[in-house]
Image (spheres, helix red, strand yellow):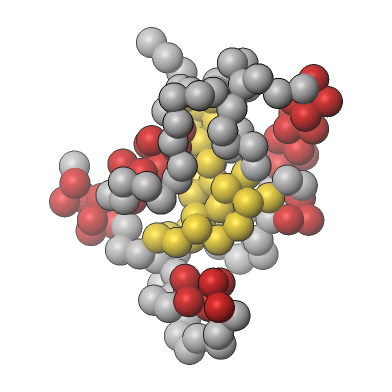
Length: 142
């Protein structure tokens, strides 16, 4: 499995955390999203698929992911420097580049009802209107 992931996922970088549609990155490539209850393992799965131990923050405390976290996969090699320092970095993203989106969980997160409603509204809008969304993986405990 690790060899397959390493062949398919060559570079991964955190791009942004969005709390509304305006905060999402430009819709210039396909996206896959991971949804599910709090502490079901969405962030851990992102780390496993990208073969990075701490790309997506994980915690034993439910509700730590509180925004839509975008990770660019197979983007241009120096994208991290461009994001972090604002440098103009030459190059293009690979033809097979895409975003992995780690969504906040519901259920066990100890957040206000208002924040839970904001997440729900944003998720509804995202799932219905994001044209580049190619797949949604709904993780469940079994």
